[in-house]
Length: 276
Image (cartoon, helix red, strand yellow):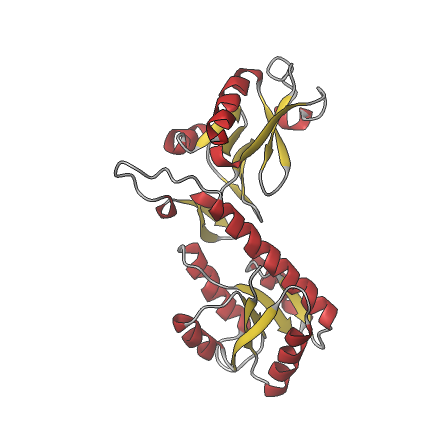
């Protein structure tokens, strides 16, 4: 993997110097501090002209605090813009819940140990690798005047906030009780809606494998027969549909989803079409 580019945001020069030293001491993943900022405003100005992978972000700073800055990045991400991952580094533990609501990779309290920082950066590197792998596996099937896949998003409401998830990152939709779970390589989201509506809108990209699941065609890794009890909780106990007990493995997350008997042939066909 390429070197992680890191922006350090802290109003205390000594704190920035210490973080730079800790980053330099991290062996894996490879990291580099590419810039520093003393305020959220400075960080925002720098990010408008440059890019980085991770922001090491203090909470309490003059002007907008770190939580407000992270919230602004989350809003840009919801609008489909590429933003860096956030690792909070602060002397105050009381903001951790809000930080994770803002999708922070980690929340480190000062004084930070190198091992904790390394673990946080390793998680960030894994998240970035998962995103890159998902994008690399996308089919190029936009032809005949269709909009490019990047233009399509699934809009969900999460913790009172609207969030757009690029359709190209969705591995599957699965109906559970009154809701639908949207799964990406790194996250799960709960959304309202019906699989039938999603299938009608994006049926060319997704394959119905069961009455409770739609899977991105490119995300089906393999089809395999399993013991009859392996996927009962996914199937809702429908023995007629699952008598043959087939399931598909999903890329990147190595999860298995049940395949109803009537959909086995369609799944085989989809896999054969990917074989190339």
